[in-house]
Image (tube, rainbow, N blue to C red; front, side, top):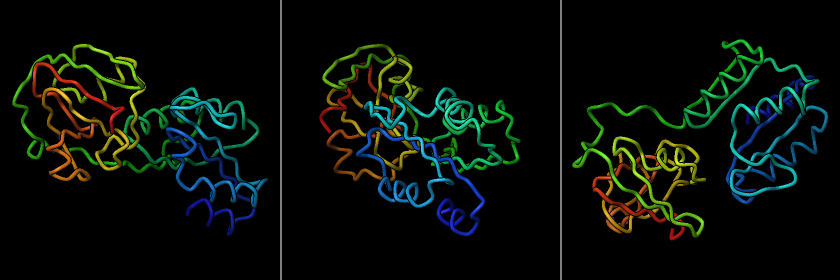
Length: 223
């Protein structure tokens, strides 16, 4: 909405959108974005980023310092960027903010919106089992087993292990990180999506889930 309104009301303005998704099919509003690109071809630039498929018109991976620097220092280096509007998980926002400050953008001109707010210690569930858990993850038809600290979320542990586990908001509100516990138990810090029945069936939001058993098996493929 900000992009469309600004391009329409301020003909001298320019926008460059860096938009990250798992696949092209997961890209919300892609048709509308492409239509804006066609209508405002000299004002509006788009760089898609796909984390789970390689496409000719997209960078492969996630929005990080490498992809941001490629856009502002290489692909669109002739454009002067004055402000930035960032929306997404906290880790991505912090990386983007740091990268743009290093690029030379004043911190006061970097505006952001988090997908979630921190959980207070009063509202955070207490783990019934604390320590090290052995976790097995089934992802893309491959099994990976490793040890993890139960204080860490399952998604974070998977990413630190080098797995390309799916995620988006990291705030327990989008279900991109959905998986199923097929062995063992887990508890979630926050859940605004799953029903009690789905939780009983073993479904979890891995960005919010911690193991509560010495061994746990997580299936991403079966959801």
